[in-house]
Length: 357
Image 1 (cartoon, one colour):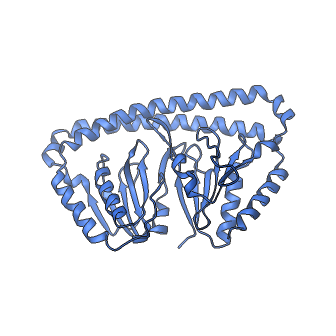
Image 2 (cartoon, rainbow, N blue to C red):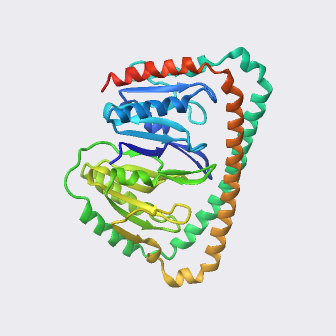
Image 3 (tube, one colour):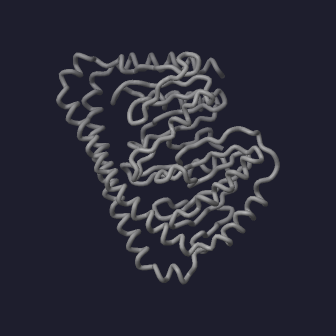
């Protein structure tokens, strides 16, 4: 079993940028929380990756928290056994220490900029920053329109859902799988994926690292939320903490659910979010829809899904433009960073974190 897992704390959606940083950064979760400050190109993601890899080499379980704007970069890294984390505390997910030094603290990488040199690139920096912001606005307009259509399709499909059958299936799963008594720890909230500049990215590779038994939920129209919430509540009632993965489009709805102490996962699968890993059982929520209802609305549902997909593709194109603007911005800043100073800072912070082992 690998020592690394992968999630997101932020996600792009039809409601704009969604984030779970507030939950993650709650003081009760942490012994030491490093809040990184500093702009583009200063090495925040590189610092977090270095710390994560060093902790893996020491045998620690490490959770990498990826960036929805650039899934190759990091927004955070979490070492659960020692309850320590490093997060990017800059926009669009601004984090500020609540109990400075006692729980959380700033690490200001911005001090390693050559300020005088950066000021000579003022016009470029302003231009690329504004271009990135405009691209995100275009992306969220397209994703917002797609969300409205998909919500309409879900409401239309739900009219044919056999709720009694779904309830019986849920009761059966709870009766078979949620047994015994857990540690009583709190639930953790993470996105398992996001729509990104590279299209939809889902870190299903994390699932087998935490859970050996996977229920795959085939759910074209996003109707599994109430079922998963019932299972989560049943696990919580017996003291089993879960990793709750909300739907980025509706963060109050559960999209995936992992219960590591039971080795149990419930993974929603559909077009654009296809789970192709091994499954203990497959639950076809689509099969709980009335055949007559689906036949009657087949053409309309197909049209709505096609239109939503076109809009989401437009959204992804704009996210690519935002990423290109950010890359250009980093290229401007990069020559004006004292990376030897950054590296020395990383060494100091890593030494402090290793002292907790």
